[in-house]
Amino acid sequence: MKENILKDRSYSFAIDIVNLSRILVEEKKEYVLTKQILKLGTSIGALVREAEYAQSKADFVNKLSIALKEANETDYWLSILKDTNYINNELYKKLSDDVNEIIGMLVASVKTVKKRIKDEK
Image 1 (cartoon, rainbow, N blue to C red):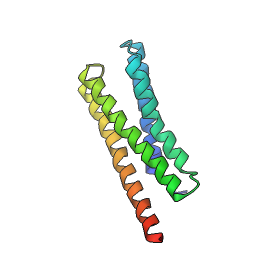
Image 2 (image 1 turned 30 degrees about the horizontal axis):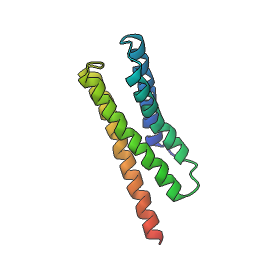
Image 3 (image 1 turned 120 degrees about the horizontal axis):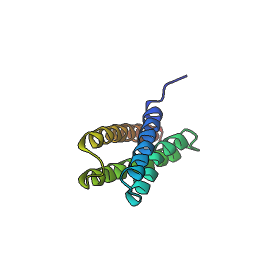
């Protein structure tokens, strides 16, 4: 079976976000930002999984494009958490690097499929 790096990385990232959310609630007693980062950070992988069974190439591109938006917004909220001292620089760097790697994979995937769609016409 072919390995799906994007699927694996986005799933692993979602697990990290769930663990971060647990820390934010239990140790920092932070609830509002936690809900935001939890929703966005886990939706990336869910959308990647949803794209696996897309009804068409256009639907596939749409799902990954939404995942890309969610990933970008996740990076924004990670910056907010860092700049308000809810997470330290080390944790921020790890999570930000991870989400930016996922963003790069999503951008490449969307570009590749869009090119294939264009070439088919």
